[in-house]
Length: 266
Image (cartoon, rainbow, N blue to C red):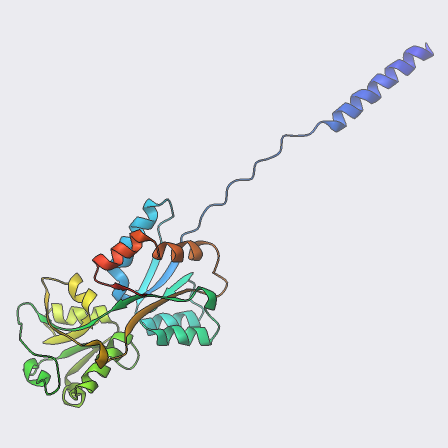
């Protein structure tokens, strides 16, 4: 009888050990879901960034979320805690501003694009003017307004003021200037005929072809070179910001920039 009891006890112990030794199938961790990149970009990049956003989605990424404004406004938003992964400015000065406050990752900063500055007029009220010393820009306005992005803060307006000062006509046209919050707003003044002329980027004029005509191009030496630096914000060098910055340097993105009239920085 004792042998039977011992045998039963041994069997029970063995079954218990087997039960303890059983392992559940390992749970497979769900793949991390890629988050959409949040991009603060200069207003002059509006159209081309939407095109690049479509290309980015076609590569399998989530649709980017863009916020467009004057570079100065975007820099101030970043300073005040605005949430973004990437900042693309229309000048080095405002990128320097956020860099000076340790708000971007300096290792990710690079100059992405170039642009040119042009004088435009409404297509329904064109005029001719040779840009250079002694040009009668004030006379060409015929009492109308000259639309500029605010030259006190916005890159496009600052470049425009530099160019007009270079040719000695800023003091003459200053009182005729209609200051806009960004370069696209200045362009709209010209498109609607609320301004007799405007100074914008060549890419803006191209985007508004049919509504405005280019009167002339300001030579590069008349103002600070127009460049577009890009960088990840502090703490955002990895993840969606890194992937998007890398895509901006792809052949597809470069083609989109060139098609829109931008130059690729060397």
